[in-house]
Image (cartoon, rainbow, N blue to C red; front, side, top):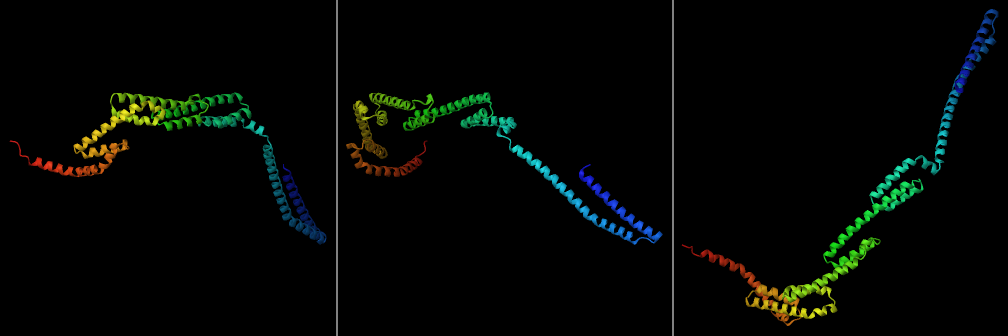
Length: 338
């Protein structure tokens, strides 16, 4: 039995005893009054005692209730104090102790995080987590395995990106976009400075440039020798981008001959178009002469006549629909055979 229960029992017994004594005194006083004239003093004393004891019962009950509540509060306070002590003990655990307690969970979390970083090719973050696994948790063998995986994965990723960059570089080089090719070579060298596959890209552009230039020279000489004047002229224009004055010197004689032939040919085309009253062709050939041979006497003569030729070409174009209509009418009037 708890101490509080014993105390309540003793209090109840005491009140029962006091009330019983008070009643006994009253009864005894009344008995004496009947037999020997009675004793008013004993009756009064018994009544007073009964009233006093009865009057103190509510106060005692209140005190007991208050004491009970105080005991409950004390018990709750004791339980809260124990809880706080446990929390304090848990808080006071060292970092090492907490790591030991959650070692397995943290190891699994580290493994998942490293796997995600490897999949996302975030090599730096993966390396930091591997160092933590090795230094803080002591999983050195597992950390070495992860390092090997990171190295392989990083090498594969870098090689893949290098291959993609080199494929794009080759496409630009094949298109003979020399400025873009030089820029792409410099960009790849900056991105992958440690790779042997990215070395000498600018030299490749220079070699491709030289090879293309020599190919144009050879093709130009062959076209000029075969009398293919128009093709030779187009190749001469392409060569103008590649050749320095010193490099162009050996080709000047051949180029001069091609230009003279081209000028003679186009001049002949212009004269024939004028003679045939083919004004549209005359205007087209005349504009070509002005563009390609601007400083020649032939170009000056064409400039003096080009406005007239344009007017005639415009007039001829406006008359063509009428001529077609007349031709159609004439055909409609032809008599039927038979």
